Figure (cartoon, rainbow, N blue to C red):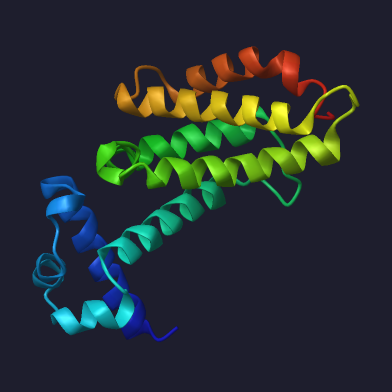
Amino acid sequence: MDRRIQKTRQSIMKAFIDLLAEKGFEKITINDIADRANINRGTVYLHYVDKFDLLDKCIEAYVELLLHYCANSTDTRLDARAFQSLFEYLEENFAIYKLLLSNEGVGFFRNRLYATIAETVTEVVVVKSENSKLSHGVTTHFLTSGLIGVLEWWVHNSIPCSAQEATEQLMFLLEPYTKHLVKQ
């Protein structure tokens, strides 16, 4: 992608995130975004269909960044290293993820994050399960819901414990379930 296009999209996305934090999604207009990004309104429409498309692309980008940062190898695992990376990344980028997980993210971020994590968990459950008694659907959604719930609690409560402590607690709680999934 041309560097100018990339820079313009970054400027639009940054303006959008700033406005999301200030005014909320419903009150943002394309004119607001264009003014904040110091570009023409038509330029915003050149890159995004409307503010809903921009929100969708923004959510997609931040979910990908989160998961890319936390991927520990091509061998997907549910282990302490992956969870520790996840919490550390959220801590480093706290403001943006708190915004996206709040109502200002309009719920779409959580849904996209849930779907993406569920896909990863399903991969681990199907490929690495040692126990044929496990229902892949039940296991996937139980583990995904638990992880998302802890992440939301951790972010909404402004990081009430360290990334390491959150990881240790999560691993302790998940151990009865993940011992069937993670081969050491």
